[in-house]
Image (cartoon, rainbow, N blue to C red; front, side):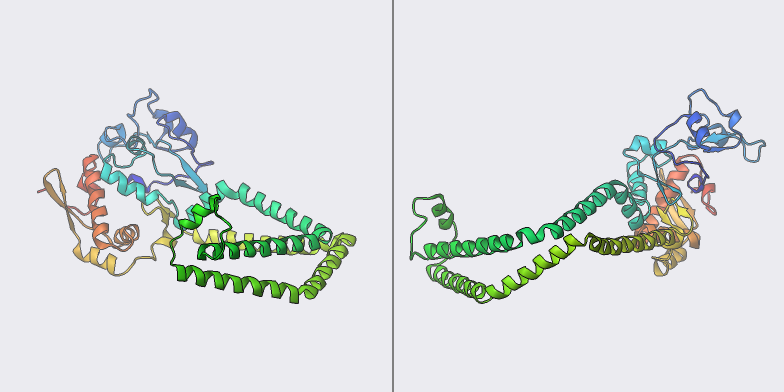
Length: 369
């Protein structure tokens, strides 16, 4: 099964290529690379049903070489995770089934290469400059605010309080205008806006009374707590003055922030390595130690009990047995859906037979009837 081939490479391929020279440079070759055809044909492409290696009689030695075309991958935790091909042409070149149904099924498996781990890693690769820049900007702005707060704390609180009271008063007047008691919006653009609000006369009057009570209560609270607010402002100004006179006080929150970031980084890195423990499974699009635990049980039991499964290819029926390990892989891919897992297995067998590998690629299997 060509999907089970794994290679150790110095760097992950980043682009699609059918060139044997490119594959040799990455070390994606089976057999002796010096005997590869370098004429630009696909005579030695491992995925080609007409490659010399596939047409070579079984057991003949030495085995002819073949190369695997390169395709875009993502370097995640020292593993080259495949990215889904963009169309059927690239899918065929990468070794995916060329049929639309099979391609859709296969591409879905690798759309999120390592599940939530892959999504997180790929998003961080793109967004980390924005996250870091936003954090630094926020930190600088916070420190600047702390240092300059003593100069405009009183003005800021006064301005905000005035804006809130003015806004509440304006809403109150508009409510009474809607109730028909006063007519301050007559002949203005606000008149049509108020007219578009559908509410009964009694409802408008009740809303105006409620808003008026809220405005009066807010005004009384401001008057009653004015002295306390001024005391709090004086405390803020004194604290800001102390920070300005002893700048080293700013180091304390910075050291706490850096310590928390280091701790979070350590936890995130450890979690990523734990989540990626094991071998990457290109069929599942996940790491086997993490993925194969998800849907073992009833789904895999049902598939094994129904084995061998019948497969219809071009009007002919063949049967293929499903091993326990393969059943568990299928159940992970299908998220526990037994029927979908069986459909994926039949599609895989059908693709292998049509690619020229026949039922012998899926042991044990019976002769087509």
